[in-house]
Figure 1 (cartoon, rainbow, N blue to C red):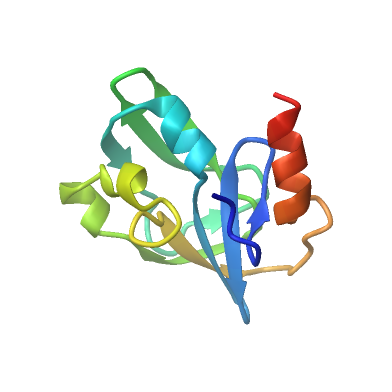
Figure 2: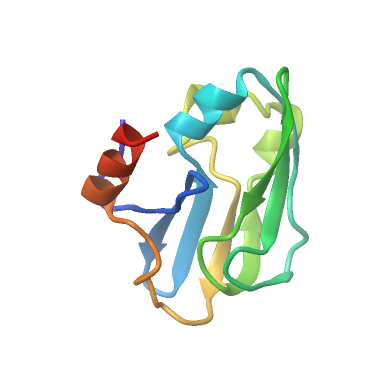
Length: 125
């Protein structure tokens, strides 16, 4: 399941862009690879991010993994529900399991993949 209107990274993060805001999370491939997610360390509000900065740390039954920001910007909102229910990333990674929202500094998406490109990338790994 790869939503068509999102952008993706080779590290399996996604970004849904709405105006000057991007919602960020991990892909279905990432949550499946991690296994049962047991903890999420979320970013601080107002944190400034560059592309590929660590935005969160996700711990699971298999490993702890860094989540990288697909875009540059400032964190404007975090998904507080993940504090009590990190498994939302397993259950609904593209909706209820989002990690944070950022105000985009530069809307450059050339380094990101669209859904079709990401699906092709998944076939190669």
